[in-house]
Image (cartoon, rainbow, N blue to C red; front, side, top):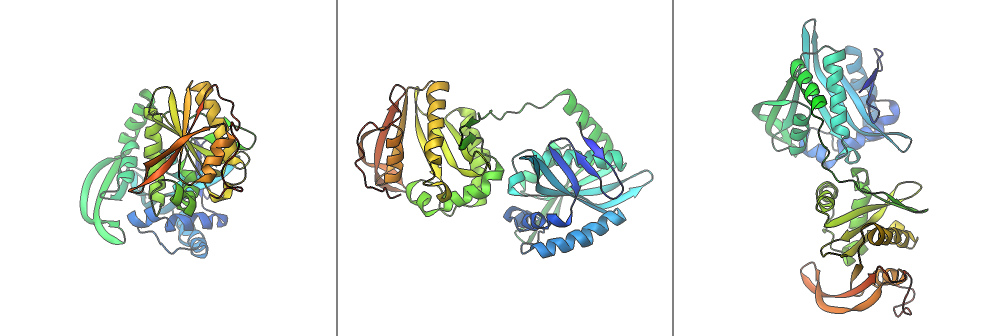
Length: 398
C-alpha cells in the first residue's frame, strides 16, 4: 500500500521500496547521467551531452517552473538501498490539463541502468498513476513511446495502459524521427487494473538466488546496479585474453547477461551465476558460476576485475562456492578449466585443492581458434588445500 506525504510544493510518494519526490539541487549529477545514458539517447529526445551544470539549470528552471504552474510535474525515482536512497530514474506527468471534470496528462520516464530490471520502474509508475487519478483527479493518462521499444511497451502494458494508436513520425530512434505508439489509461481502467492485481497477485517467476557470505565477500544475485562495474571488468584486457566475454563489451551486453542469460541459467539450473561483492561496500568485484551440465558435477567459471586481483577476494569467493556446491547442492565433483598458459587461474585452483588432470590440445575455443586447455578437478572428499607442490612460475603472471 503506498503512502503519500502531500504538500503543494513537495509531494512525496512511497511504497516503502520506491519513492517519487521532487528533484533538488544535489540531484543534478543523476539527472545528467540519465540524459547521457545510451538507451535513453537512443529511444527518447535525451540531451546526450548534458553535464551537471545543465542538469542543475533544468532543476532550478523548467522543472521548478513546471511544479509552480502545475503543468509539468517531474519526479526523481529513488530506491531505498544500503540504508539510504539512490536515484535510479525520473518519471513525469507533462502536458497536465486539469478540469473540474477530470483532465489528462502524459507520462514520461527515463531510467538509469541501476534501475532497470529491478522492478523500480513498475513500482514508480504505479505510484504515479495512483497520484494522477487519485490526488489530482485526472481522467486520462497517455503513454508515448517509439515503435520497437520493447521495454517501454512492456512496462506500459504491465501498468494497465492499452495501445490505442500507431502514428507515423511520432517517435525518436537514434536521433531520427520514427513511428510512435500511443497507449492510454482511464481512471476506470486504472481501478479495474488495481482491483485485478489485488485479486490475482502475479507470481514472481524469478528463482531465488541464495546469499553466501564471508567476512570479506558476499555471493549474491547480480542486479542492474552492478552493470557499470561488470562492463569495466569485461573490458579489462585480462578478461578479454583469458575468458570468452564478448569483445567491446557494452552496457547492452551487461543488461542481456544479467536479465536474460543469468536469469535463464538459474531458472533451468544449468548455470548458477553469482555476483561477488565486497562485504563492506557491496561493490561488485567479479562473478563466479557453477556450470551444471552433468549429474553430480559442475564446472567453475570465474571473472574478476583488476581492482580485485591480488586481494584474496577470488579465493574467498570460490571457497564459498565450494561449500555451496558440495554441502548444499550435494555435488560429488567440481572441474576447473583454464586456457593455457593462464597461470593465475591455475594457481588459484591449486590453492583450493584442485588436482591437475592434464592438458588437452586444441580443446579450448579461443574466439574461433583451437587452443590448449588445462583441466583440474576436486572431489567432495578432497582436502581444499594444495595437494602437490606448485610447479608454475613464481610469482604467477595473469
